[in-house]
Picture 1 (cartoon, rainbow, N blue to C red):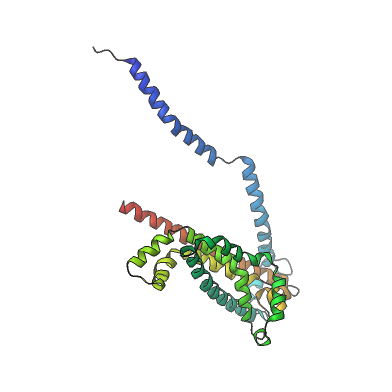
Picture 2 (cartoon, rainbow, N blue to C red):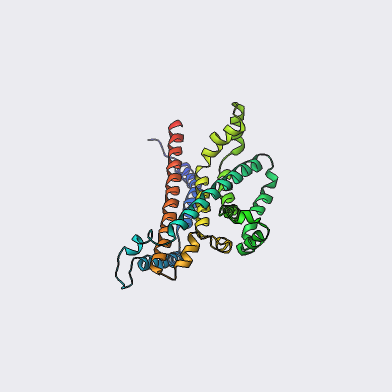
Length: 291
């Protein structure tokens, strides 16, 4: 029988063990990374309770009548209240105008800065953050002082103020989408195939910014439906102004309006997340099938 060289076997075993040591250490690091201590769960639970308890209390209060019984009378009576339809219609129109103007300004500007003058990205981002620095009451008082009287007679001029207020949120959403794609390569590929700038923007860039654009639209719409200071000082009754004025008459109905607004925003944001996940899964399936 041939003798087995135990020394060589031991050496190979030790060498294999040494090679597997980094992999084992990486696995251990990943396990430690994903293991969350109990105090982090406690902080997460407290934060969840901080947000959930007021929402639950608001829902319970909106579903109660004056006698303390649960009913849907407050929700059914929303559309019958004086001034609600006009306030909601005005806020919806202002939201549409603000979204259109914001997207028309932000998307081409962000794309141009990324492609032509990337050195100005920090300056543009700083400029878009300025509306957060100045309080809305300062902006509206200054603008009302210099606005011509014929513009004050139309509620549409509020959309111009809302565009300024929504600029940080709209630009940040579009900016994150542009950073997630290889914009330079996509534009060069489109231009090399004979595509013009307009077709490149509409057929190449915008389809890759779908999630970011939807997020930007939702943020701008939520801002318009929650802004109170400008519309109140300008003398126009939008939905937030109507809510504040009607709160003294019936708190149940006002709380129901607020809860339905939050529910609508939550549903839209959930749809955005689902669309984003479905697109990511579809792209992953295409990559796996091609490979």
